[in-house]
Length: 118
Image (cartoon, rainbow, N blue to C red; front, side, top):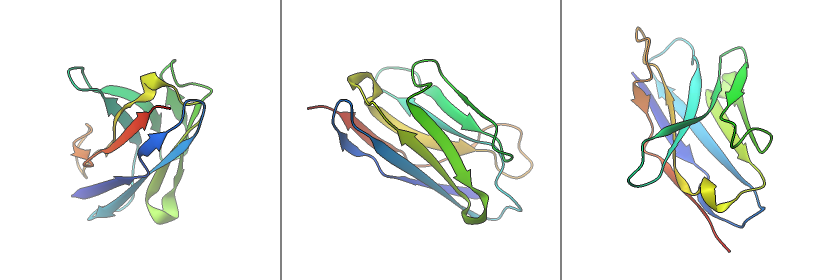
């Protein structure tokens, strides 16, 4: 099983930056595709960014050009650099991947709160 731990959330200023980190550990040969999701209370969790093991990336339109997802396979770590923050980015951010033998995102971290406010 894969265990995921997110960190780096907190209070960000409008127009400012934060970097989230997701560290994977556990029993797996190699970390596969990883995604960052976010969720606001009362709303569905939404996919923010995704990165394949080879480094291919994709983003939702509202963060494209502001957020950058990257990874360090040697460290089993994925990052989400968030720039030009705005209030709509306020949410709990989760990273996720698939457990060995699974084809769906079934390993989730505990989440890290991001609040954008002046």
